[in-house]
Every structure is written in C-alpha cells, then in structure tokens.
Amino acid sequence: TADFEYYIRYSLDDQNKETFDNDNESYSLINNELTNHFTTDKIINRIGGFIQYKHNKHRLKIGSYARNVLIDNINLNDNSTINQNIYNILPQLNYNYKFSNSKRFNFSYKTNSSQPNMNQLQPVPDNSNPNRITLGNLDLRPTYAHRFNIRFSQWKALTGSYLWTNASFNITEDAFSSSVFYDSIGRTISQTINIDNNQNGNFYFGAGIPLFNSVLKLKPSIRSGYNNNTN
Image 1 (tube, rainbow, N blue to C red):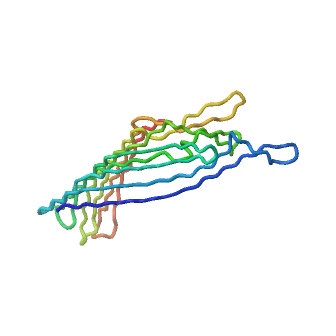
Image 2 (cartoon, rainbow, N blue to C red):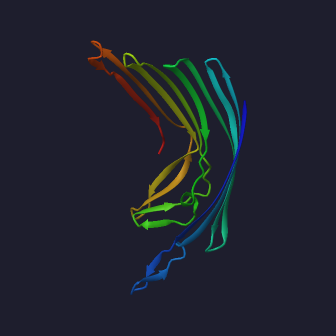
Image 3 (tube, one colour):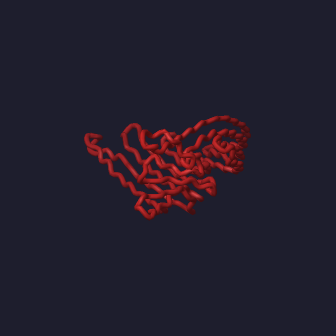
C-alpha cells in the first residue's frame, strides 16, 4: 500500500526586549544598541510519501518527507529582516519481523532537522545577565540528524521469563553548540555555532529468569552509553 500526507503550519511570535541606562536618577534612558523588538513569521509545508509492505512475518514502511520552512524574522526597530528559506529531504524507514506473538525484532531509521531560533540568530547582544553576554549568529545553519534504532524482545507468558535488548545511535550534522570566550574585563561572551558530527549511542540488555518454579526471579541487566559531542 502507499500513503501520502500533507502538513502545513503557520505561527507568529513576538519578542520585545528593552534595555535602559541610568540617567543619574533612574533607569529610564533607552539603550538602542541593546534593545530589540522582533516578530517571527514561520510557515512549514511538508509532504510525505510512504510505501508499506506486509508479507507473512515481515512489515516494512519506507518513504520520505520533503519539507520547506520559510521564516521571516523582522526587527521592528530598524525594519531589517532575517530570512530563512530551508528545504529538507527527510527519509524514514521502519522494519518489523514477527517471529511469533512473543518474539519480535524491529529496526528503524529516521532523520530530522531543526532550525536556529530567534535568540540564536539575532545580531543584538543579550546582556540580561551582565556577566554573561550572549551574541547572535546570522550564519547558523539548520541541524540534520540521523537516528538508528534496533530492538529485540522475547517473553513467555506462562513462566514470566523475558528478554529485552535495545541499541540506538544518533549522528547530528551541523549541531548547535556554544562558543565561549572572555572579554577584557572578564565577562563571559557566548555564541551559538555549528559543529560537525555530534554522536551518541545507547545500549540496553535486560532479562527476567524465573527460578524454583517462579518463587524467585533473576533480573540481570546491562546498560552502556557513548557520547562524542563538541562544546
């Protein structure tokens, strides 16, 4: 069988930050360099096509999304605009094998992409914490993530025994990370940047083994993780 779907979403966000300097009597003198008023118009269009194959113990679903994200970030203080027009192809795959009603195997592969938000892009410094200044980065690119997952399970209802194992591995291209340095008076200056090939993985194995006619149950488990992230 073949499935098709279409998704559209519109959102409008408003962000108004005002910064004032002391005029010797009160904080009433607006600081134009640190003040900003942004609106964000976002339109997401996504179309997907998938083929589903079912035969005996096999179940396969494979296809892809094609997505366009159109974002207009408008600075109402100076009428400048930061445009983002992003196209993605996002393949997906899911495979199941059913040995029996109590024994199954699954493999999946998914992709996803995230766009930088207004706080990460805006060129106006954020000094809401005077000791930690945040700078925007107009050159940020969207992330692109690959997610792999393998799962196997087996159980026996009469005895209560079971076995469960799961392994996952993720790779993120152009992942968001923070670049941090210090200025001449010791303040922390941070900025979001893109980095390549952040990786992380997890593995889990668990079992339930009944002993002495289920009077006792042994539950061994193994859990491990792997991370290779750059900050």
